[in-house]
Amino acid sequence: MPARERRRRGFREVVADDVDLLPLMNLFVALIPMLLVSAVFLNITVIEMKAPGDEDAQARADQAREELALSVTISAERYVVEGNGVQTVSVQRADPAAAAQLAAALAAIAGEHPENHDVMIVSQADTRYEDIVGVMDISREAGLPGASLLAADRALN
Image (cartoon, rainbow, N blue to C red; front, side, top):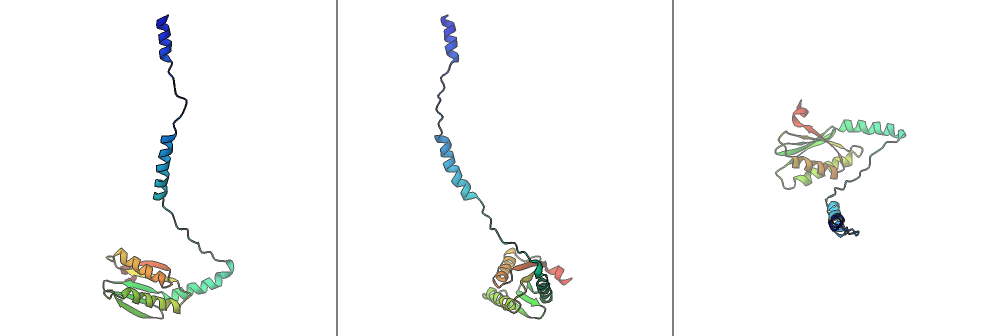
């Protein structure tokens, strides 16, 4: 019998009934701030809606935009601002004040044509991305937020 009692006692193991939550809490304390820091926050923008009665006003604004057809051409040596009924402005890119001159020309056009918010940016295939983004930023600050891109070879055909 003593051998049987030893076997029975061998199968019984004492298990602690307290669960240690401290390591799990330490993990959460380190993990939650890390996730919050690495999260990407999106800007929520407003979607423009048209009221049913604004169709005539919208049609007039679309017609005015089509009539103006404002464009900024980016070439290797200059920016050229053109449009229907607008005096062509050429700005040398090598000039340190080129961005200010381009902004002033676009702001003047935006002031003369307040119904127009669009500008076409015409670029060559070898135009740097930073240059295109710079012209987009300048046009947005001048009051022309609706920028569209067009390749120079397509504009010529």
